[in-house]
Length: 269
Ligand SMILES: [Zn+2]
Image (cartoon, rainbow, N blue to C red):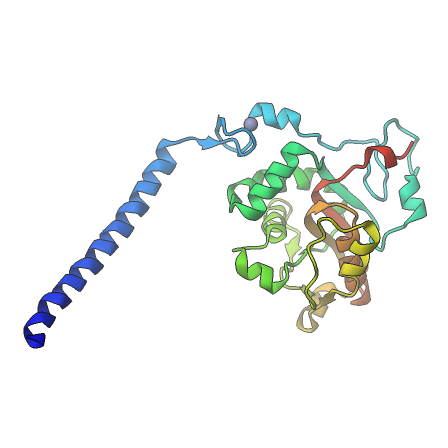
């Protein structure tokens, strides 16, 4: 009975396998066809859009940061205080990095873009976001030797397919020719998510959390580094990264992010 029953079972399982393969191929073909047939939807409002992932309406709602801004922190000034005038925040709390620049203010549309890139696998957004960053950071990039993305902790990288800061740095590398050192900076201990923490808690959460990998030291020592991240909130993470890079004898560290939080009531002048 068993001897008779097993061949049909194996044929059946072969058929099932073939069917699964067909289904796989079909769904792949169907997906390709859909990709061709359907226009991309605006990531913010879901209207059809061609190209960049953001429609003209949402693009217009993004607050691109333009001069005048604090030459140190990149925080926009309400009016122009004259060149080389630093923000109060840069004077009161000077960061470890030299200069920071951001493409846009972190508001609703910017948040949607950042979340889509980070959590929804919308890697198609990286080219536009990276292009805006390259434009906002051109002064920094003109002087730069190497791009270093802020690393994810490996446990988080495990759950997420890729590092969004790495995806943005890759686009900037392609546009500017400044080389990227993807594994140069490592997270050497897990950190809590920064969301919901106070400024002081954020700083102590990430203090000493980063280190330049021993085998990548030569990519950093004596080099002018541009650190790349998606969002700058309190600046605690990039500050901790900058300290690690400076400990590894980086010649200088600048910071380039897609969006930065601009605290209206703390805004200088
Ligand atoms: Zn839109």
